[in-house]
Length: 343
Image 1 (spheres, rainbow, N blue to C red):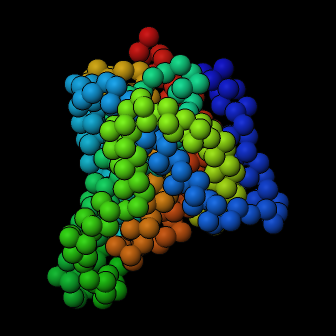
Image 2 (image 1 turned 180 degrees about the vertical axis):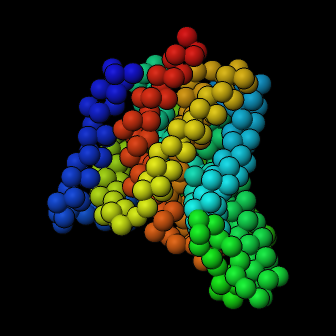
């Protein structure tokens, strides 16, 4: 694990991530234009989807793919459920539901970084893991909104008195029921038509239809992935530095959750991958997905789906705690675990 950690830390993309944190910490005026950062995000999603589609065209639909996607789906249902159960003891149910959705979902940037890391370490994950990435995004959002609607319904049913909120906090029924429950149709539409989802799936479809010929035609474009990822991680470092300042007044228990819950999810994912007989490459990426937390898609949907929740909590926890932990410590740790139990 020490060698893998060293390889991770001296990788140019990771070093630029640290540089971004440093620049942000000293309050430099270094800033990546929002349009450039958005382009990098879309580029990485397209390329990772395209490469996954090409891999699918080569291998076809296999039993290994089915087991991997089943494991991903089970984790997508289970992680938000037990995350909510833990958080409900210390937070009001709306914040608990929003954070549970964030940690029940996945980080595309962490996945892309992990895939690059896996290739450097000689692992060969299947292209279907790009589909697993999409599959694990939406269930957490849906479950969180259902939980929030349940809390609102309880608040309306108890007009007299207060609705317990957990952690010694109480919710005012009037305030809790101020936001009407979103229709499930609208939730599903927002969850499944998000631009990042569609672009990733579009890349998979194009890669699958064009196969090796498409791979050769797109080679100059896809070869830029490492450089674009490094530039994007520089922007992520700047964002982490900005958000980390908000944690100084946060709760220590939430900081611990942002590290301990991903580790717990990683252990469960490893056990599930071993039980289902996944390859070492698939097991590594499944573990990374389970341990990651969304800071792009889910916060965007949850922000108006659960307006009672505090965005600074779920967004800051996922971006300023879990994301850097996974990038710096998590990737080599998960790789070590896979090598330990798969070899």
